[in-house]
Amino acid sequence: MNFQLSDSVLLSRVKGGCKESFRILYDRYFDFLYQYSFTLLKDTQQSQDLIQELFVQLWEKKGYLEITNLKSYLTAALRNKVINTYRNNKYVDLDEELISQLVSPIIGDEQLEENDLEMEFNRILNNLPRKCRNVFYLSRIKNYRNKEIAEELDISIRTVETHISNALQYFKVLH
Figure 1 (cartoon, helix red, strand yellow):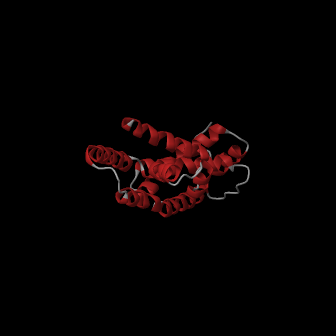
Figure 2 (figure 1 turned 135 degrees about the vertical axis):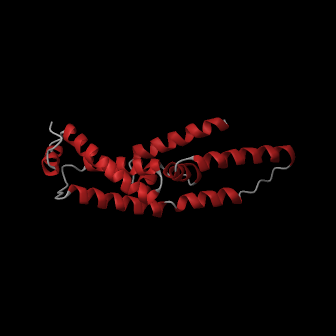
Figure 3 (figure 1 turned 30 degrees about the horizontal axis):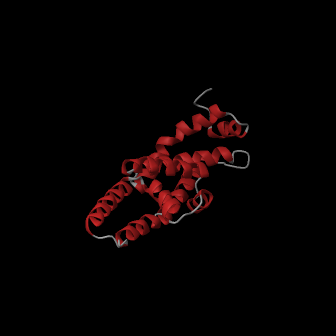
C-alpha cells in the first residue's frame, strides 16, 4: 500500500477494517503526537500510553467517526486525554499523603522491620510510572473494581489490567 495516500483515503479504508491503512496512519502521526504529549506531560511512558489509547479508541470507533481533518482530530483528542490525566493525577498525591500518614501500633524490632518494608514500598511505588501508580492506588488502596478504574481514568479495562500486572511485578521484590 502506498504510504503517500491521503488521510481521507486511509480513513475510508480504516472504516472498512483495513489494518494496513490503520498502521500507516499510526506510523504517520505517532512521532508528532508523542512530541506534543511529551511536551505537556514530560513523561515518556505516559505519553506513549495516551497515544496507544487514542489509537485503540480510533480503531474501536472507526465505523462511527466522521473526521475531516485527522491531524486536528488526533491533536484535540490527545489534548483532552492529557487534561484528563492532569485531573486524575490527584490520586498520586493522595497516595503519597496517605502513606506518609500511616501510623503503626507495632513497637521494637517489629516496628523497625515494618519501617523498612514501608520505606521499600514507598520507594517502589514512587518509581512506578504515574498512570500505573494511579491505577494501582485505585485498585489496591481504594479497592475499586477494574471497570470502575477504567471509567474513572477513561482507559480500557485491558489497560487497567496491564497497569496492575506491571505494578505487581515491581512489588514481587517485596514478597
